[in-house]
Image 1: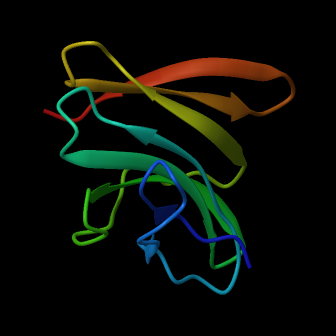
Image 2 (image 1 turned 180 degrees about the vertical axis):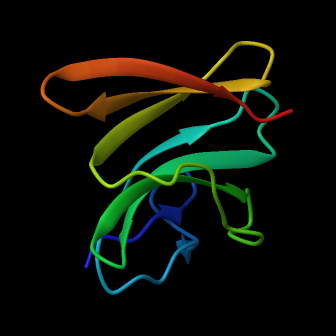
Length: 97
C-alpha cells in the first residue's frame, strides 16, 4: 500500500491521512496549509483528489479514464494543475474555488 501520512520534522507523531488498498501518491499542500491534493488509484482509475489537512472530506476532482498525476496548487489556491496522459503527457488545470 501507498498511503499519505503527516509527521513532525523529526519523524515523530506520524498520522495516516489516507487508507486506500491501492495507491495514494504525489501529495501537495495548498498554499494556506488547510488542504492536500493527491493522486489516487481507486476502482482501477487514477484521479486527482483533495482532502482537508487532517485527512477528512476526500473529494475526487477529476473523472478520467487515463493516467493523471502530480497535482500542484496555484499560488492563490484557486486552481490545481496536474499531468494528464492520453497519447502524450499534457498539463491541465482545474478551478476548485
